[in-house]
Image (cartoon, rainbow, N blue to C red; front, side):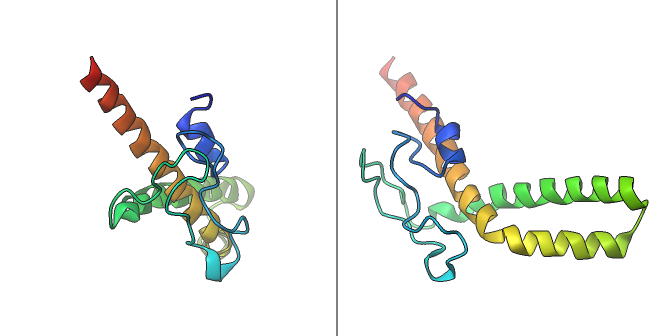
Length: 128
């Protein structure tokens, strides 16, 4: 394994080999293919759908990304204009809507990388 799972996740690649694409379509704004993923990595064969409902946990990763962006937006808006609730709500809402497909994909990517890393570490311990 030449690449770390989290570095591979940053490029939306397989956490095991770092080569296979996680999503069938590279464009996250193609709404019809937003969620299309191959069943297995075309390079190493890692299952991208280990069990039914696997990616429900990715919602928490996506949620963390949206909270981080919202906090960042609040800070820079507060520094520029002081407390401007309406301005914050408008800017933050527009950014979150525009970035939703990207956060969706990165949520899945980082969740798969996290689970792969945990299971890989557990399997190494069992072998010892």
